[in-house]
Length: 352
Image 1 (spheres, rainbow, N blue to C red):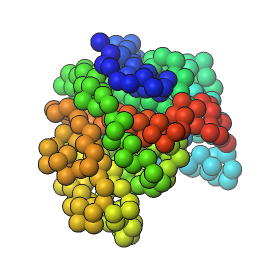
Image 2 (tube, rainbow, N blue to C red):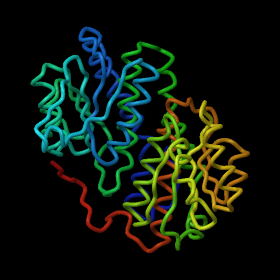
Image 3 (cartoon, one colour):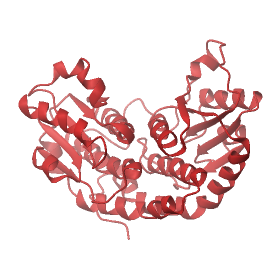
């Protein structure tokens, strides 16, 4: 059953569709993930390179931690301009190269997979359209099963990209326990939507804010990047993502009562690092927005975005991003912006 939240936009409707989209991805994609994993065991990649842009690049950041922590693989983000502008294609021998794109149309991401196949590297596309150039360029296409997404800002395609990466990692690891945990994700996302059903009042308090920082670490550095992107593209406010470590290497000097602090703080092995930034924010009287399942963190925040308890850390980005999506939508509406159709943007962006 899809949870109820205000449907002030197509974006809001698509946020609500995420539990069903994730369930569909699990149901329809598991056999494909295991088929790909079986082939990869034979190939035995030495490292992973991921090519992506926009929200897909944030899914790639999740992949860096995921394949590193669970599959013990070194992961790098591709630099597509090396392939398309500098004529300096790096060696991809022995690599698994993954291209992630909602549309599968971006020429620079396709170029990375073309170069990889020319070097006999194994390639996977993670995209909505199995007939897209990206899917055609890959050895293995892994469709997202998200259904049509009409809002320009990605929501269900993003969380399904995370699910795709998590499924590939679980299939490579061959752990039944990982699949059991994956099966609970749609329920956790549904609960996160329910817990944050109406954020209009909290977003309204920030409607005159033009800049803020978003903090997340480990698996949820990707979440901080994605929430910041959602805020920027739907509300036109400058939202900058940082890990706690990078934030303390200089940018923390900016923090004061005029710079709101958005913390992504689910229970994790890096919770203490995020809470150090929370303490600095409180000391400097910054307005704090927190996405968390920890009561002490939520109590310290001006705006508390609640997460359901019990989400495994490796899957928390699929859940923690959802309150951020909801808040970004409410923030855009409070500012009089049009979250379905941000100015100057289209659903498909072609870069080379």
